[in-house]
Image 1 (spheres, rainbow, N blue to C red):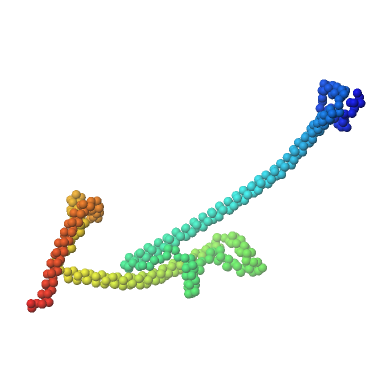
Image 2: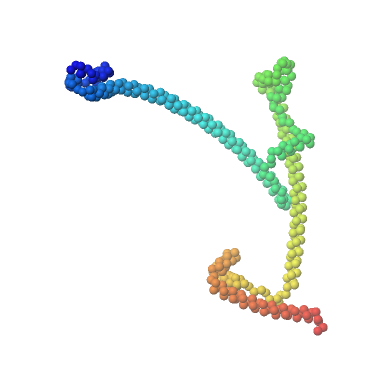
Length: 383
């Protein structure tokens, strides 16, 4: 019996025993296995035992391997999460930097807008001042027009360009007009007196150093010492203002004389045009009067149209209905009534106009015959 049981045992017996110990099999299962081994069995029944032992060994080995795999997967997931977190932090930092840049740009744009608004306000104020000056000029022109009783056709620009003013200043300088110097304040007058003394005391001192020394000395000067310089400044200022007024008045007179010359020339041109138009009107009137004299009063007049015939009757009725009505409103009402008339009513007025026209033609024929007879008698008075 022992020899038969030893033959079917596989070579991997030690491993199978270890695996069975780990599975903690019960006492009943051990007894069953002992009975199977003790009984005689053919060689064909041996392989299933090997398969069961292999399966048990595979299950026992797979348990620690699966635990290792889970640990490795956890470490890998942590390693993958770390670069992801780093990338998210980098993106947040970049977004914060972009926001800071946008805020800086926004502040810069706001400052630029404020500067532009200030420049626009300055320009508007300049335009307003120039407009006021132009209004003053226009009022002066109107006064001159009333005094001289003529209407100039000249138009002045609203705003004189700065270039024109600069050119005028240059022309004045070229002509040799003596420019008035503004009076120097008392501090500068005092500096002129003290300059040579300070230069002698400090010959190596530069302009800045000398000016600093003068400023400190001026602060130490008493009010009594400053009085003569202040009086001199006031006297020069008064003389300067007087000269400015005289020059301004002289310039205004020159401008007025030039404007008067221009206006006189324009007035002469207007008078010439007016004379021409008056002559033309006189000739037209004379021709019309001659034609009226030539016309024969016995000649039959043209008949009125259907609308005129209707308007005569409608005018009478409207004047009776509405007293004190204007001619313009009366004519408008007549035209409205004429438009509201039906074709049958209009036909009656058309028939009246046609009858009047036929009578006019007959009268014209008779008139023409009589006129022809008169002309023949004039040409042949002996007959």
